[in-house]
View 1 (tube, rainbow, N blue to C red):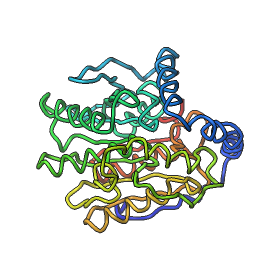
View 2 (cartoon, rainbow, N blue to C red):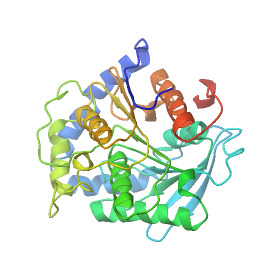
View 3 (cartoon, rainbow, N blue to C red):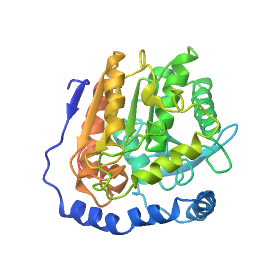
View 4 (cartoon, rainbow, N blue to C red):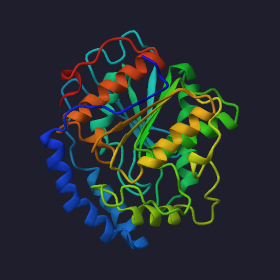
Length: 329
């Protein structure tokens, strides 16, 4: 497998995908139009997120969860698969969840993290980094850098670390890589971004405004304005798509063809290649934002994890095939 390539998976669209995207058009998208118009909505969403932490999230019997603590935040260790770290002692994947920097948590993203533990053949540290409205982008980035530094200080070699994230967590993944490179610190062996939010400048998103079943383009722009208040939105640590990616490790980007964030995900791929970074860019037809989180019900999402396994086999030396059953709930 060549790492530097564009992929458009041509699997037949499942009935589950058709049903879910139709449901999202009628629920998630109108809700975001209605709610994301005032700072009070973010505070309410953050409070709701605290309640969500109490809701049990189903995982397979072979997966385990243990709490993790760091200087300014917490998180959880996820280990899954019968051979999650067999022959890979010391290896780890740092995961940065999405949620627009104001919602979600490691718990909400367990459908992603336990499967990543399987395909990466290593435990996953899902970081509970600080978010808005009480905190800002700098706090989130500081937590990610602190967690990475803690892993190195605990004996993990940078060549044994993978970083991954989705949406806002994809933004944080890219910003973390750029910050590590700029500080002259050792870089992880590879990175994966799922539907990354990479451009926080105040530009109107016209592509897929009507096709995206989940995100309203105007609300994404509203969030970007809020999180960049008092910052330079053209700073690569604020809008990573504007950064110089020279020297960064191999990168995999997974996005859906109808997302409002699709174009900036592709721009990241182009920008990274200009810096000499091998990029596996996958654009899945008709898939919604961060569709791998729906792997419990979407066949396409489970296939995406098998694609991630193929990428990691080359980029990070992860051996062993991954089957549909390995990533099924």
